[in-house]
Length: 503
Image 1 (spheres, rainbow, N blue to C red):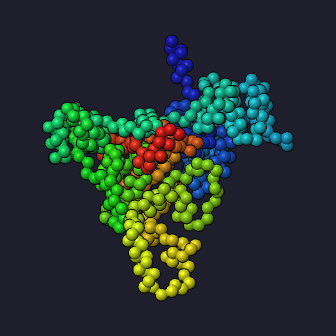
Image 2 (image 1 turned 180 degrees about the vertical axis):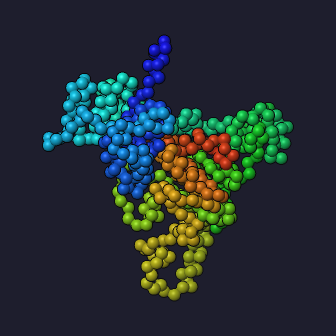
């Protein structure tokens, strides 16, 4: 029995694929007292990415820095280095892999290598050479060897060779709200607490109530306080800690020179309360398409910038094509980012434009024609309104005044952003490392809003349980500065809601 326990405690050998290091540059230090191997082919792949002005390029450079700090001599490179957690880190060169004038060759005749030669013979592919390194360790080490990769196809190929393979699970989050917000239903699924009618009436008038049985709820957790005699009567509330609940303070946006919008459902009331509360500086939102995530976030941010609560608003969106990438985009950063942040521009255009009254518009148009002399050739300015002329967009004055900025995530490193409200759209595409980079950029008096749809993830290296949005919510929920809201009900249009649920 003791021998078995000793055998089970032997350190495992973990072989890291390139995508794991790109996903989390600190991943090589997360395997406790086990042995971590980085195939030399991974260094080659990282070298191809390091010059990119993207998050992938930044992460590749960080991995190079971390490795350079550890491996300072040739001897360390050959023997490996001891890590603070008791494990070992190796740069693995496969001695059974050779290259000559005829290409790459495997010089081992083990059953695994024979299968590798037959099934995956193209060793010019770095993935197949990484597989060969994992196979070599599996053949030569008594302790189990595990290939760690976020590439599902790579996991399958490893298992074909009888090499254990798994995803990088250190930042995996188990969150019950993930499936709830992905469900194809318009039913709102918010937690409720039943109280007597007298207490509920007092809460509705005073805005404060203490329920001793609810002390264990997280800070800033939103619930519906419901009359247990009349379940159809309820008042939304936010848990302020210690069983104390406060009435929501804000349920509409009012844009100066634009439109006013009111919350259309209970979830939107929760969201607006969090967006307008100055004590809440981090808001995370899960919601499917059409639930109003972007529109309400942009509206609340714009109104608070107009009122002076914040000096400016920043908007970014994770650049992750859903179809074939359109390639290089010319122009300044705002122009390059324009296709990606178009949903935010659409929201700004709606919020900043007043509904027109057709009869008044026609009268003004007619009187203007009567009073003006014959038109001369229209100048080629943005305000001419002539055919083919560029029409100024409602948000352009905001950008010119410096109160609206479009930011690229790849350029956010090193910045400190004070007195700003920052909206991160499509945050479900972020890696946990990228999410940490964004949240830690926020200075005093700033607020960051992470919004996303967990059913629409295009990043091949994250999923619903490992992306930066759920990671941020998981790690920071319960902090006094943080609130989380789920949105279930689509409000874009009846067609959009039905399509979201049936297609």
